[in-house]
Amino acid sequence: MQTIGERIYLLRTARHMTQSEIAKRVYVDKSTVSRWEHNQAEPDHRTTVRLSILFHVSLLYLMTGKKDF
Image 1 (spheres, helix red, strand yellow):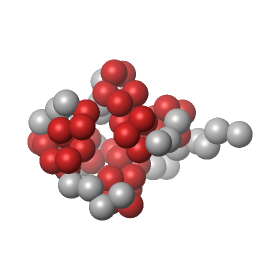
Image 2: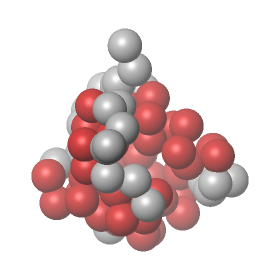
Image 3: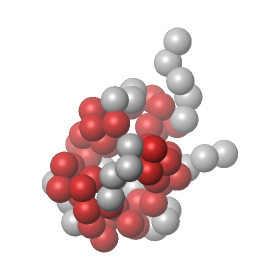
Image 4: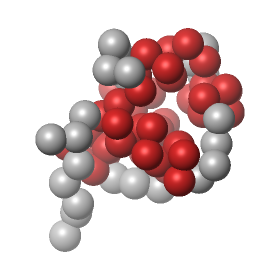
C-alpha cells in the first residue's frame, strides 16, 4: 500500500517540480517535504489541503490513494 509520502513524491516528480518549489508553494521548509517523502513525517491538515490544490487531486486521493468516483 502506498503512503502519503510516496504519493507526494510521485505527484511532485510527475510535474517536474523540486522539493524547494513544493515547499515554497505550501509554506513549509524544503526539509519538511523531504521528511514527508521519506515517511518520517506527514503534512498537517491545512498543508494537505494546499497540496491537494497544488497537485489538482482530491483530499481522498492524497490521503488514501483512493480515486473519487
